[in-house]
Amino acid sequence: MRACVFGVMLLLSAYAAAVIETYEFSTPALEARYQLLSEELRCPKCQNQNIADSNAPISQDLRRLLHQQLEAGASNEEILEFMVARYGEFVRYRPAFNAVTAVLWLAPVLLLLAGVGGLLLLLRGRRQSGGSLTAEEEARLAAILKSPEKDA
Amino acid sequence: MAPRLKLFLPLAIFVVLAGFLFRGLSLDPMELPSALIDKPLPAFSLTALADGRALTRDDVIGQPALFNVWATWCISCRAEHPYLQQLADSGIPIYGINYKDEDEAARRWLQELGDPYRANIVDREGSLGVDLGVYGAPETYLVDGDGVIRYRHVGVVDDRVWRDTLEPLWREVLALAQEP
Image (tube, rainbow over all chains, first blue to last red):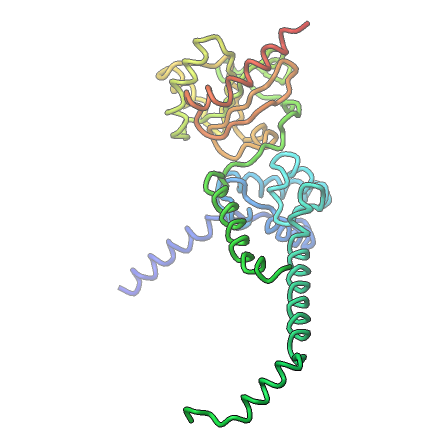
């Protein structure tokens, strides 16, 4: 029984290893860049995965291309440019800053500034309205404080 | 701001948000604009499915044509096939890009289902596919008389797609090609 379970697990592990292919790299630096780029490049088919995680045929192709280009000595910029020329800015999880993507990059900062600005305005408004009562209001307040509470 | 107007702020925010969300209902997030629109069809040096002769970009450009990316493993391509045949019968030149397929299976498919293609470019490794930015089959590219990609449709071309999007562009491209 135990041998049988072990056998099944062995079979399964072989399958798991076969899901994503491995590449041999001439230097560890290239391998590190491969990891970095394959995590940054987005799978065009299965849109919320990077090509490192995706097992779609197109991701396999892109990983193979990535490996080839790294071994051929291409720089990160050249590789990203190659991918963007074919699949559009979409293919990068960190798109380049340009006229099209400016809104994408600047929106968080602008929203944060707007939020902080709004908060400051609100706080200032509250401080101004609080603490300064007119003479009439002061008199009413004093009267209220002096009179004994009826329902106490 | 007057205090009265301030009361309408939540309503205004709601209306703006609702507007965006409503717009989102009719957007397809799977639809990617092609990076190759208005760019020349990429150069390639591949073979023809029918007889294995060499095919390059120069062999397939010169007149407006559709380029249809297909494969025998692609189920939607089977659904699309009769409509392509219909288009071809009405005189529209269609080139096939047989994408990551087996030649034998592809030839059998054309024998059984009919052959709407002027020629089929065998892209076994998907290299032309990558140059075109293909990420699945079927995809159909509209290429004008100068060999420039004018439109990319992802998914099945059917009567509606043809009438609503491809045909108007096709007429435009055809008119341009016929000008001296």
